[in-house]
Length: 151
Image 1 (tube, one colour):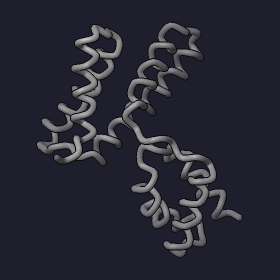
Image 2 (cartoon, rainbow, N blue to C red; image 1 turned 90 degrees about the horizontal axis):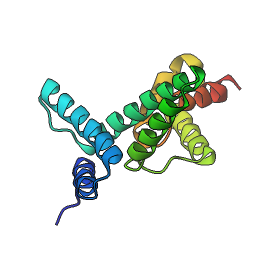
Image 3 (cartoon, rainbow, N blue to C red; image 1 turned 90 degrees about the vertical axis):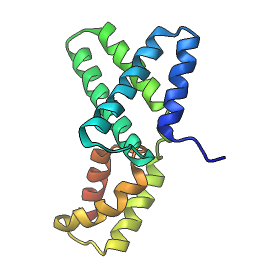
């Protein structure tokens, strides 16, 4: 038997949540599944696990941004809702990389790509992105890479 795709796992979690009558979780998982469906219809493709991870990563990033805006606007109840949604979505993302693991990946990519200047950063980023997708914020990766190249 082949391993269930990430999308199938999310759909199964949705069904389980529906049976358990967990309204908030059902709402979040339906939102996730509708985002997948929208992309599949718009682009006429079947999402693979890599693309599903990218979509989940984007959704978490959007919610983090919204949460920060709600906190700045003194709307803690809406910020809590965003935090809850982040937690539900992150359940399906791989474990986040530690700073040391990320540092190692960036250093290896710099060496493999032969990058010495910040203007060639794209070459290293192309090697890094598939390794850290869904496990680290690409903005943080970019800052780390710039810092390493400027020293």
